[in-house]
Length: 311
Image (cartoon, rainbow, N blue to C red; front, side, top):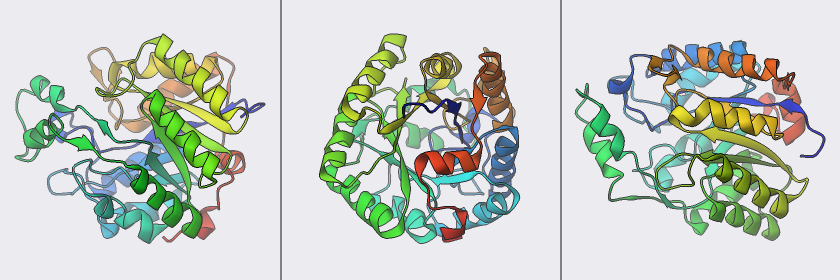
């Protein structure tokens, strides 16, 4: 959105991409997810993007009761905007992925803007020993299956979460076509400005992580949405800090977190989400960029406020 120059830091706390065998620092239990999200908020994240995991083995978990265990302490102990996934576990049908968002009615939800190949399987080659039986098949599943987000799925989410429950969205765009899909729903009136557009780089099956890819996505979004959108950048894995820093210099907002990247630096595992938030906040401060507070984000994105959620 033109004129907005306070940078929004989003933190994706645990996600459904990485498996516990990759790092001992991935939050798994509700207590760990709450602690990690609170730490990220204290470090400067205005938005915390949240998935749930089975506390026994760390597998993705879409149950409302699991989400509720960590949402309530996060809401009580921070002012952060709480953003719940609708992507969840890519192996599950849309009805299961929407169970918690429909029940809990948060201020924000993520919304994937298209079906895609979502290649996690190469990660399995880098894991010497798996801690849980579900991990290797879960990663391999992405070799032959599609992460489904059809036009009908997107429409259902926009109507049932957006129109009926007042939820606003982090529109996750993994490729140029996803921006055009978003423009389609904007033209139909199912999406209303200001649009929070999360452009995602470096996922196998989506657009690549080259700076030219970043520039191409921004040029396209500028042409499609003009002043009606708030732009954010997500770089996967080792591309996280260089891409989000480049994007911030270009006028964008940033997303970091253990969902997207496990490393603080080359060969150095991040021990917490707060460490990743602190790193990007330090970079932004060095660039003389101000950091948006949660309430400033609520104003920017016209959110309904924490008093109007279902938890």
